[in-house]
Length: 320
Image 1 (cartoon, rainbow, N blue to C red):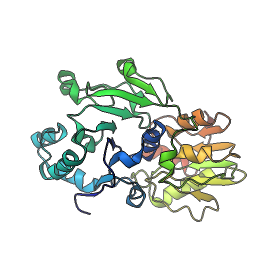
Image 2: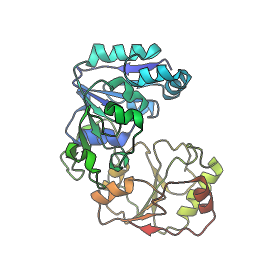
Image 3: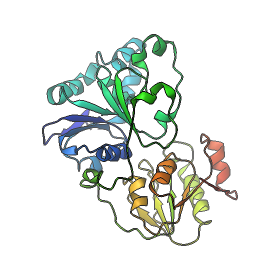
Image 4: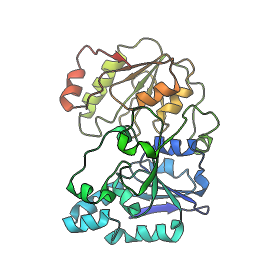
């Protein structure tokens, strides 16, 4: 892949800078259309999926990070300040030529967020990131523009679903997204095929423990087989978008991992139970479907030791 791939089919009014399908879905829930939005992302999202959308710019994630890490400290600071992107100035030129006066939505804590450091922006929920009270270093205290997760004065609004309480410091910026609205979010479904009326008693949600280096692939498979064998009735598996493990021999229905879990749940009318090891998605699911019983193993930060201990142990799930 070259430095980036791009496609433009319509005039651009908005830029969406994200690496999350769920945030794309929320953007659609807010009433915005992808046909006049430049989706600015990286190869952390599947290219074949993003290619379904009308406008995008995709940067090779590993190449960008490798290049950034090769820079000296001063050059890194200049890059993240949006002043000079070195060989990635071609990306900045593309934005200037095609979307210079557009509103910017998305996330402010990604490496690709640097391309919009000097622009006003509106944030969209990304897991529990905006619900955590942040502690900043000396640089951020001296210059608040370098603060992330909505604390920067360059962030005007933060759109959240209300899964947790919000720090007082950013409370005035918060705008609510109603995830239960049936009238919004349809634009996202124009590009992502959503299965209807999925029939199962239980849903198991995976996480990319193998891809993130916590477990070997064999250990990862053993862990989720240990989860599956404790569940009765029909089961569907929804893998995390970055989970590359094949669940074909689990004797369960496996849904497209690129579909936001919230859409899987809302299209599973018979669903009774959800099993999660640890994921912030359980809070959003609770908003969508209060009748479904959500079972989780821990709310603590996941560790390699914890996961390996779970492979052969008698798992004790807690109800949310």
